Length: 528
Image 1 (cartoon, rainbow, N blue to C red):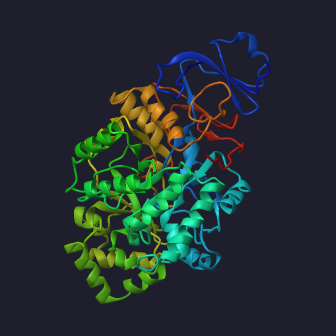
Image 2 (image 1 turned 90 degrees about the vertical axis):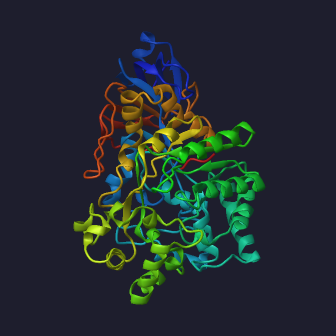
Image 3 (image 1 turned 45 degrees about the horizontal axis):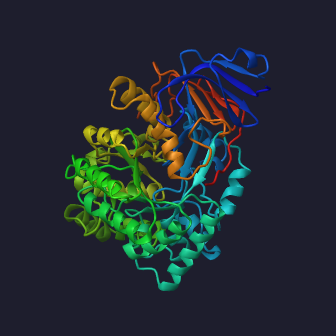
């Protein structure tokens, strides 16, 4: 038997949650060949052999929640950010989350969208007419790992309606549904919403139901960043349930959390509600990242009306003293239907992650910048043309542990590949689960953790022959030391690689060895 690669002497975590067992794993023409342990007869026939005594071999990790839509298209300056996921064992990233992606859009809207959605590298993010254009662009850009994409509701809305705070007309909704239908037929993995972000937040429940019906017809899930993850998280969960019921789509709740002091502890109720729905037959799951800090844009800390019209309109309001006063009042008093992050925590819990033109403020809280915090935030946004990423210290450890341990949660990093000091989850999520929550705390078993990272994720997003190690499966593999694996990334040095991760194989080629990214670029755009 001629093999391209043989991993010899490892324990197999096959992605199903079954107990570890000895096995040798071969690779031939990009596919898995499972062998009896210590397969000496085939050793000489393998082009390359990795001795793996004491290590665990698992399917490559599938990150169900990323924002890596553009990073490999941005050239060498973004390379360290682009390879952070594969260095922690992620062989498939699912992007297009939180309602935001790079497609689809009516051609006449594309220039406006490029001007309102910058990448943080001093250039405009590419926007594509359809999924095929997105896939073709990534197909011509070298990748170390694979990419799949959801269709973002906010992007759909921007690409048809624009950035105005209003309901879509019946015709506009029909066009949105048609573009979504086309993208899903071309290979997009589902529909996502980010109902706290403009322009997605301007869409009501009925609008999302209409779009989710399209996803349901394709047998693809409705994936949602809830309209509120703070004081109104339970109400927001019920809206998601209503959308799923009325549309018939499977429901997946993104980065499930109960953030802010008014919501701490409510995972006891939200998880019980999801468990009850599952017991009654509803197809509902969630994902989670293993940190108590979130990360998003600074502009999302402002009331929704502040962002109406897009980035340039926001910057115009930030230049106005009276508009800043309105923002201060809205944050102090709240706005009906708005997730008021600052009102639930305070500016001292919001720190700057990425400010390309003002790197000296990275790592500092908005409250520490001096003067009134709204003015400080406004001036920073103006200086950065609206492109500032923040870290919000908003969650509690017991809530994170509860979601991690639930039977229906999988792992998503919510990685935001921006320069500066991005959240360390971009480079540390999966090793952190295996090190902190499996080995150190025994919260879940290693087999269960791997299942959440692989087989469960592949099943949710329809990634056939991925996420489980069996004969004929795609040869996406990760080899790690269960006794030492841990995250290396910190808030001060967010791109440090993990320890204890030996080898990452993508499409049968070694993409990472001993923490070093190889010259192989086998990654492709994958579809359900």
